Image (spheres, one colour):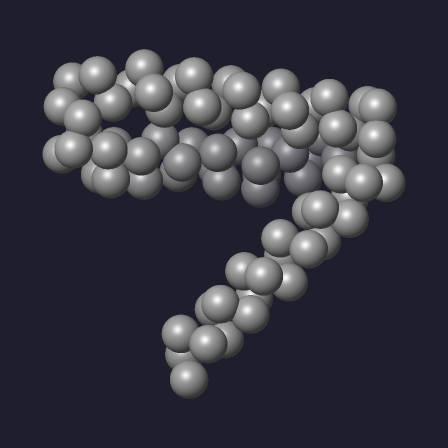
Length: 79
């Protein structure tokens, strides 16, 4: 189930990150935007993997907190 969820939800979601970064950073940073994107993306990936391996309860709590904050801001913007 985890592999199926990763293939059908995780990969398409991750593929969208590059598109968003292109439109936000390319106008400001020019041709060097991809280097900043790549370093940040790989750094964040390493941090999350470290968290899941060494402090999974904290990582899961932070994940849930991020969901609550995103839903709160989404609800506020619709009001």
